[in-house]
Image (tube, rainbow over all chains, first blue to last red; front, side):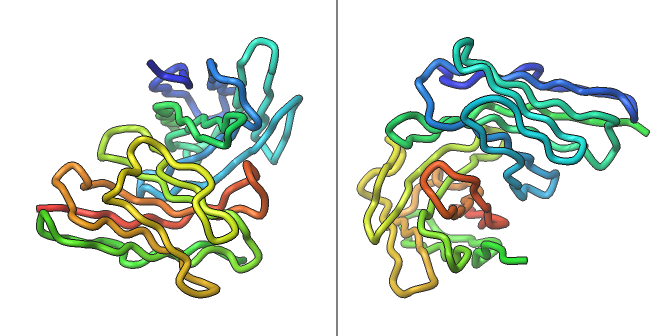
Length: 108
Length: 113
């Protein structure tokens, strides 16, 4: 049983396309995190949110607490956005649960 | 820009040996974490640490594992008697506040033979 489910698992897009990655969770959370894992393995935290919406450059993250759902959007995608995007949540006991990741490939 | 560092980048060990993975969190951060990622699998939470004690740990973090902050800068993960299935990438992270944005280290790849 996965507390965090992501879709799609794999995504290929043409450069410039608008991309959406979805995350659903089944536990009560204190925060939701979007992480980016590069092909070399390094992990970068993109967003931490507990309500509403956050924007950073071409990246937008939204969360709907009632529906237990979050989306990560990438506008004007670029090949350098190619990475694995991971959704993770911390529950009210500060335990972490990770999704299996969405592998994004942006083709020039 | 401050960053989390980890050493070594790659550790190879024999089954049954003890290993210590080292991390230097960002200096003003108060919360420290260890995660692991077995090749091809998702990232898994191991343990969180605050105020010199473990605040949360997962089922994976059994008696073979321990963490320590031996001085003001290092944060270590010790595996007492490694098993083949401990082979994974181990990531350290730190944050200013609980559940806050985390900064991840580059990882240590542990290979148990």
